Amino acid sequence: MTMLRQQMISAMRQRGLSPRTHESYLYAVTCLCKYWRVSPDRITASQVQKYLEHLVQERQLSPSTCRLQKNAIRFFYINVLGRNGTDFKLITPKRPQIIPELLTRHDIRRVLGACKNHKHRMILELTYGCGLRVSEVVNVRVQDIDGERHLLHVNQGKGAKDRLVELSPLLLDKLRCYWKEYRPAYWLFPCSVLPTQPLSVSSVQRLFKRMKVLGGVTKHGGIHSLRHAYATHQLEQGVPIHELQRLLGHADLKSTQRYLHWAPIGEHKRGTHADLMALVYRDG
Image (tube, rainbow, N blue to C red; front, side):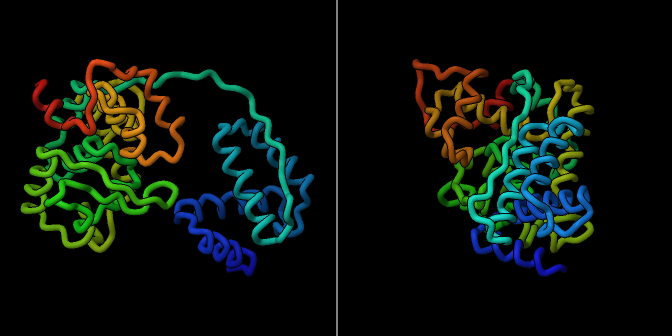
């Protein structure tokens, strides 16, 4: 490991950045080095600017990917090389705003019904029932389930933040049945090959895609669409937008408000947390 790489890792650890951010930032700086074929401390600000323009114009990467690259490189320049005040311009073309297809409760029931493996079904039920990101569901530990208070402790979610999410009575019962059958010791969903490790994100993503096909659900979207469905269905049940923000772990309310295009808040009812799993199976 080079000295600069180690310094960058130390700088990220000191600021409490998540392991996933570590990987993304290191990869971004590595790509910059490969593009210019020199050490990053020898790359000038004008060269960085040209590289960012290359990402936008020639590689046509998404605005979010380009912003990630910019932020990573800027972090390196300021916190590793000590070049304070460093900034780069990033102009990306506007892309059409397309509303993704929303999974209905009927769609979700078909996906879950396609799961003949109890463990696989429990993974998807927990993802939808608590509105988890895929990176969060694979890292759930047995100790994160508080059966007495009906809460799930989401440990170090996006942005290195913990949060508590309500577990509905039905979902908690399903988790207890799952534990009695599989008896996981540490990770709730351990890898079958290496039980000391959790399932990988890619494994769960592939699982969801297979179940969609088997269930005959043709709508576009990966496993993150379960989180979108959770947010929208909670709004439909009258959960206030600020409460949904807490449940999803959003730092900015604007991130939560995007779900309003699917389900405007109903004025006729107000709630705190709906038992979505009970609604899915009731409608069947």
